[in-house]
Image (tube, rainbow, N blue to C red; front, side, top):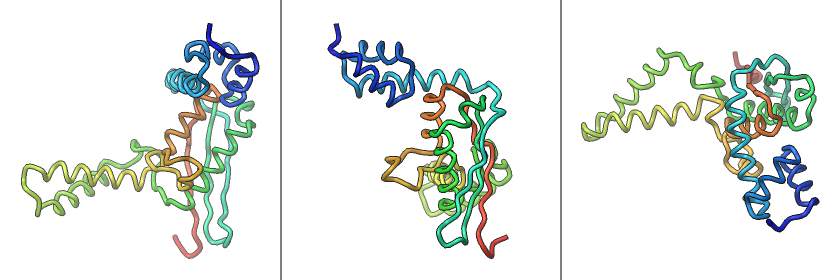
Length: 200
C-alpha cells in the first residue's frame, strides 16, 4: 500500500484541479510521491485534452493588456466549451497572460497553419540564398533550421512565454495544453490583435 493520506490526495487535487479518484490513483501509482503523481496526472490530462480537441469551443473571454506607458496593448480571444470554464480564474488569468505576451513578443499568427504557404516559401528561398556560402550538402538543413527559427518568432503557439521566470521557458502551446488538461475542456486561442501608438 502506498504511503499517503487523505490530506495528500486533497493537496494534489488543489494543485491540479483533477478529480479526487484520479488523484488517489495517481498517488497509488507513484508510491505516494507527489511530484511523480503530478506527472502521471499531466500525462493523462494531456491525452484527455487531445481527445477533446475536436469539440466545439464556443464560449470564452476577450482579455486585454495595456503596457504601463499606455502606448502598447493587445486584445486576445480565448475560447472554451462552457461558460463555467470561461469564468474560471485560471482560464481568465491564462488569457491575460497571453495578451501580455502578445504585446511584448509581437507574434503575427496564432498557429503554424495560419502562416500562408506563399510567405513560408518566400522565407525559405531567402534562407536558401543566405546558405549559399555553406557546403552544398548542408544547405537544405541550414535553410530549414532558419525557417523553424523564423516560425518560432512569428507563431504565437511556438513562442516561449516572455515571463521566463514564471513559466520556466514553456511555450504558449504547452501552457495551453496544461490549462486544457486542468479544466478538462478544449481550449483555443481564437485570435489576437496588437496595437502600438504610431504603427499601422
